[in-house]
Length: 184
Image 1 (cartoon, rainbow, N blue to C red):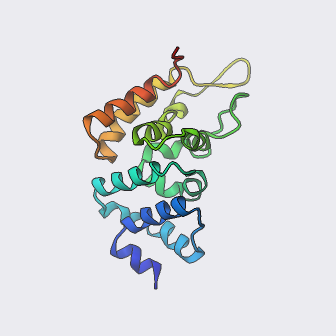
Image 2: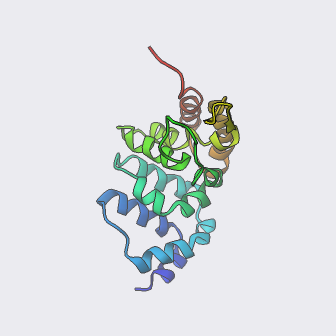
C-alpha cells in the first residue's frame, strides 16, 4: 500500500503511526517515515479533538517518547508551533547536557506516570526557555523567569492547539508554572 495515499486519506494516521511506534517500540519503515514527513500538512485537516486524543493515548502509555518525538520533531512542531524554537536550542548551561527540546522529551520520559496532565506538563514545562534566554557574565545561559513565560505560552497553546477540560488545563498550567519550586 502507498503510505502517501493512506496519509492523504486521513492525516491522523501520521499520529497513529507515531503512537504505535511508541507503544510497541518499533521503528517506522523508511518509505512510511518519508511520507509522514512530507504529508505533515495533512494534519491541518484533523480536528483538535482527534489530535488531543492521540497525544493523550501516546503520553499515557508511560513509554519513552524521545526517539519517536525526536525523529518526528517537525510533526510535533507542526502541531505545537511554539515548540519549534526549542528544537536545537542550546542551553549553554553546565546543568543541562541537552538542547531544550531534548530536555523536554527526557523529562517527559522520566515522569513515571500514565497521568496525561503530568506528561503534558513535562512536555511543555520549559517551552518558554528560548524566550527567556540570557547569556550571563559567567558565560553560561540563564533562563530567569522561564516558568512564568512557559505558563503564559501554554495558556495560549493549550487553548489553540488542543481540546482539554478546564480541570486538565488548570492542572497543566499549575505544573508548568511551579515546576521549579521546591515542595516539602
